[in-house]
Image 1 (cartoon, rainbow, N blue to C red):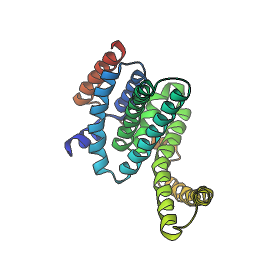
Image 2 (image 1 turned 30 degrees about the vertical axis):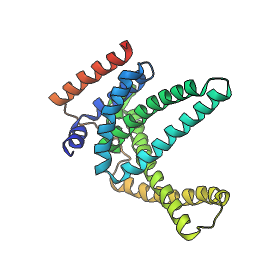
Image 3 (image 1 turned 120 degrees about the horizontal axis):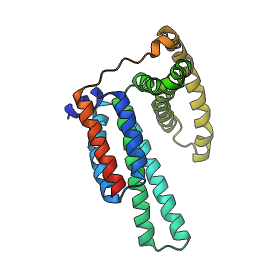
Image 4 (image 1 turned 60 degrees about the vertical axis):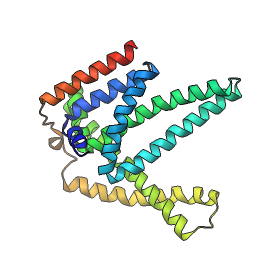
Length: 235
C-alpha cells in the first residue's frame, strides 16, 4: 500500500491542482455511474494516504460528517416539500456521492502535497498576473492549507479535554466555551507560525520561485485525467 501514496506524492503539484479542478467541475455534470467509478478510485487513494498520515483520519471523519449532514438535510427537505421517501432517499444518496467525490479529491490533494508545494503551484499559475501578486497568493494559500488541519486537530483536542475534565458539562455550555478555547489556542499557534515563517524567510518573493520537473508519469496521469473528464461530461 506504500507504492500508491509514494506515487501520488511524486506527481507534479501543478498536475494535481489541474486534476482536482477539472474533475471537481465534471463531477456535477456527469452521470452517477462514472462518478461512482471515480469515487471508488479516489476511495482507494484516500485510504492509502490516510494510513500514512496521522492528520488524515481526523480530516476524513470531518468530511464524512459534512457529507452526511447535507444528505440528511436534503432528504428531510425533499420529504417536507412533498417528495416520496424513496425518491428523497435516491436524491440524497446522489448528492452524497457527488459531495463525497469532491471531498476525497480535496483530501487526496491535501495529503499528497505539502502546503509549500501547493503554494508554489499557485505561484506558477498566477505568474501572468504579476510576480508580486503571484508570490503573495502562494504565501496566503500555503498558510490557509496549513491552518485548516491544525484547526481541526486543535478542536478535537479541546473536545477531548472537555470530555475528560468536565464530563457533566451541558451541550450548550460546551458550545459556548469551545469557540473561546479554539480562538485562544489558535492565537498562540499564529504567533508560533509567524516566527517560523520569519525564520525560514518565507515572507519574501525569492522563497516562492517555482522549481518543477515534468516526468513521463505526469503525462500519463494527465492523459488519464482528460479521459476521465471526457467520460464524465459525455456520459
